[in-house]
Length: 353
Image (tube, rainbow, N blue to C red; front, side, top):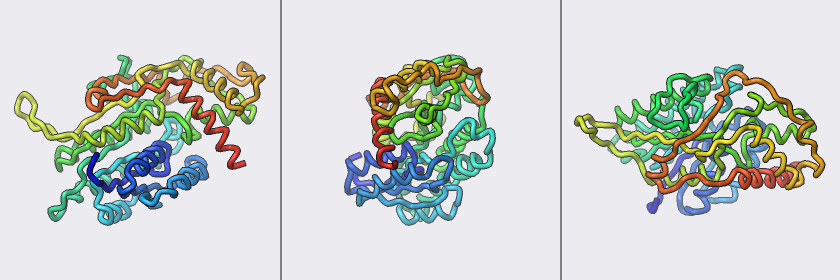
């Protein structure tokens, strides 16, 4: 990534988007970085505003409030910016929310991504150089009912257990088709349970923290036996930044068939832990950060429950192909990552209250 680039990042006020933008604007002050987000109220908008306030300190960042489900908005943005790199992180997130609010997933995750693919396709019109690399966020949820672990990217992913997962699988299929038809270099990244400071309040660790602080009971599903491959946000950002330098190339297989410039990788720690262990470590770090009192009674604030609809019993990433490509593998220890979150949470709530 030596040359100057114009980069569009969708979901610029979101969790991963914020941390990625922050990394890029700090390291590349002469690169125009454009973030777009519709600032919906799926979770507290004040947290998105907090992130944007931090990003507003950098002159090379521009924020556009807009919905990628609106094709005119997307096409206009691409025509104005002529981006070399597009990093698509905007999506309607949440497994359980997709059961009760399916329309928003079709609008954002299907139509929104289609609009981006069309914008990338037409970025080559009239002889323009066009988008050199589209990177998009997929999810470990696409593995669905797969039982073989760790999950590898050459496994079939046609047994989703939630609409959210189904939309992410659909994104991968659409991306492959556009890469094949229009030779757009596209990389999909299947993220595994990303966590850390400024994270989404609907994620388990953030939701548990809010409940602990409020004195409420935390419901631990599948009796705490679910295994999750928790991946710290800085490791995710490092992976994305490195992947930017490796746009896929058109290749020919052993039978002479031309393959599109399309790749898919897992981004995970490769070391799943049980939900119960995760929550126990979280409450210990919250006590250490002063978020919870020293005599906090963890046992009195948790309730064991059966598995709930849409959940996967385990996620576990095989990241060997990613490591081979970029020379990096996520390695932040769980306790270190949760410590960073707990300290941020304590500081954030001092500021807003």
